[in-house]
Image 1: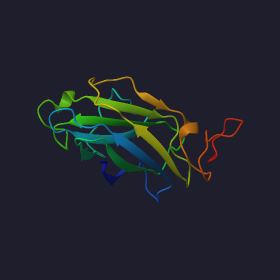
Image 2: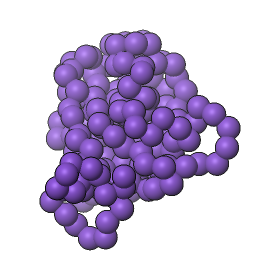
Image 3: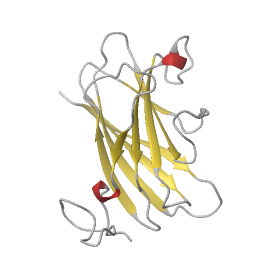
Image 4: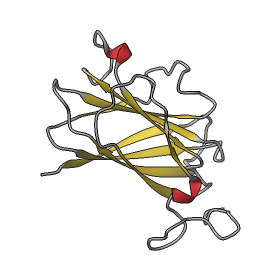
Length: 168
């Protein structure tokens, strides 16, 4: 049985004004292995690297269960649309990732080459089959042509023959 679908919202607002771009990120989280764990999701622009300190802002957590769990995360951006998006999921003992040992919690990492387009809502999916064991794994990559948007239906690629995305 699948765990319920949940919706969380992360904001990458760097300025004032209206929301201009949204990425709907669908996550398939792995089941917990032994002790109860939370999947703590954060997103940052590529100007903040995975190895740089990430503060606790924008931390959204969901408990893992005995079965894989589907989770929907809306990432909102108001600027810097052409910059890559970094997403990390830490598997912590607490929802706030502040328990003893959580500073060394294993994590999953994803780089989305381009997630946002001015005035558009895009979609991407990331499936994580098993809990990772490393605290600093090599990130998975999602090419901008794999980010769905600006075209009805399902396509093998969301880029034109010239390499430009349908949202450009």
